[in-house]
Image (cartoon, rainbow, N blue to C red; front, side):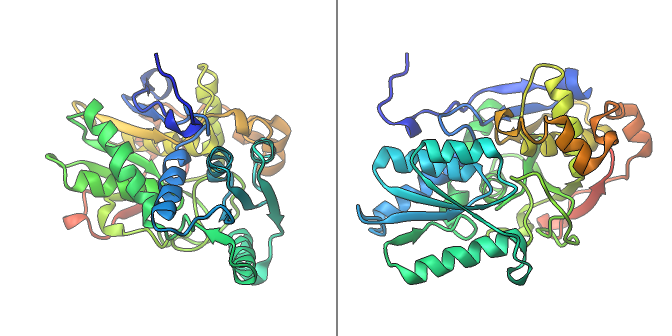
Length: 351
């Protein structure tokens, strides 16, 4: 029996879904959505807040402020409510309605910025607003998930060791890339491990994180329109970029088997499924990280009209190609980069 007194004290670390029946290949999906914040962002949020407390940056008069597309905002809202801090989340119109309502239910204030092209799109507008507030009032404390080393340290200390305990013979790890906190924490940990692990980053088409051209992205969670300051590509062996329509197909295919996951998870699974289909993975152990569950995406990824309006009828089906089809049609992937430098990047069109 587990008994807790604060909501951030609970997080299920050891739950995996075997996706073989869904994608046709062995892939163990680490489920990070089973905590009171509902996502992997609880780890980074807790680490960043507690680091700020240790450093004396947070006082009872402080107002936490952060730019977030959703999940980190919920995690910080929960922690702020538990610890007695005020919190302002600066987000944009892509943030799911359910996510905004959750933050407000937890007592946080939510500010939604417009897409200001002068500031570099949604993220630029969010960051400009945060900086203006911080300059105007010393009580604001910006944790800055994009630059804060506690973001990746949370996963170096918890996520990666948990995977290592469960899969001591791990060969492949697929990690979604947003701020790259999860990616960098896991990649740094496994670079020092007792055996070689191939770390494959999964990004969204339209993200510029790894040098791709900017484009429209409507599903929050993964991807950036600036290069992530935390990113060190020398730790990444390969990069897969996934179209958002393929993200939706992957989410809906998993939901058809009873597993309701979020958009970030759909992107990671789509990228991993395509990679596994193009390679001989017999005897290899592959794990992917699922950042959240799907309830917050009911009015987007799982809403038929929303999908049709933005991506067309094709995004609703048919089911993704089989592994054999992908192996025949998909682009070949490069071998491991020497010394982990200059990861190979490719765009995955169908998963």
